[in-house]
Image 1 (cartoon, one colour):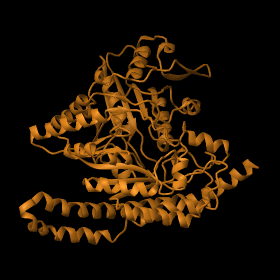
Image 2 (tube, one colour):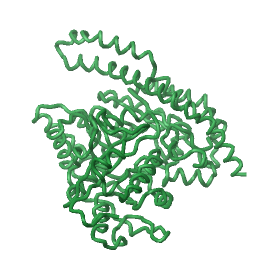
Image 3 (spheres, one colour):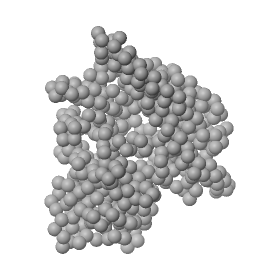
Image 4 (spheres, rainbow, N blue to C red):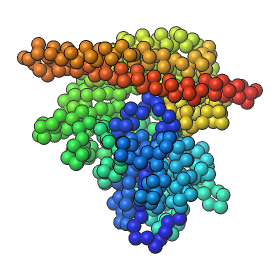
Length: 525
């Protein structure tokens, strides 16, 4: 409990470390999650509170690192004791680490609060018995302030909307909180609260929610919008206070509110012209937005250079199972349009999506890999990411696979494997679990190869090629930069895959997978 005699209190929000090295590790060292920053900023405006964020995936050399992974919380608690600790549960694979941190701070007498996409109804009881005192369900900016006031004033927790806690052995869930709609009233996220991190790419947002209703996704609900002016204010604030040049707009689907999106792009273009600086911006966007040339032109003029596109699969039957309404050939044509506009395109795929019961579709792993490789080659994507389907808590996919008794027990494969790199359920016939587990890496291994180290060198030595374009330096730069960047990333991807493979073998995951399948068969029978 909080010591009510104190004049000031400290809230420390922690983003738990990934369970091991994985394909996200490189990106995580260059950015930080936006959610904890928004929540920390809200509390930082409260009288009597000091707030800090520790991102265990972005700790620089001067940060207090633990012996194995993450931060040295013993050191942190001696240096700046936290009264309340907030734990970010946005990624299911970090939950075991989150519980470990919660139990440490609970023993130190701190109040522990957790929130994030992982904490849906089915996981609340587990969390409350794993070192968590309170869970914020849904968005946290308003809920955390009400909860802290109730703890300080000894008010009724039942009146705090959108939280869960345990009382006399019973789980109490208070009245749900309405989603935030007035984003313009929220304070600008204060990234100075993130300690020990070196942020190169700053996350910003304008839209929360997504109406696409994909079976495998946790983001649901009608989209809610901030004004274009507010998003521009976030970007300009970070440029002026942090000298930020690189941004990623974390909206699930950029361009959902088309006219307002174009208005934002035009305003951002004018802003950069006024200040005489060019920004580098990335977004997540639907493939079918390629049909809107006005939107794409506005995006390019605004400095949006990078697009992450969810292709999901080049196999028509799998697209249908995911509620996607595109055909593979159409996807190729739309991809060409993004390339024509000069975007660097990152393709996100899901391998081996499980068919619904009763659907007559069977394809061997070898043929599936061939289809993926052929599509990726023809699409000429700059970078790719191939994941295995994740039956995340709260998704329709998990509910369906549980009904079909296909999900492997968490006693065999715990939450730490829920990051898209590991098989977590019985695959469709005729694929074996071992074949499906190996497939994603085989596809990415076709793109990320050692030979690109030579291409990087060749591109560097070919830099004088720009001299041939002195009449148009901008054109020459574009012709040189794209292949150089692509070669560099593909070589870095090869290094990442090698590190992941070593960690995979050390973990002996294939043996765990065999045991999980045996236990699933016995339980199903």
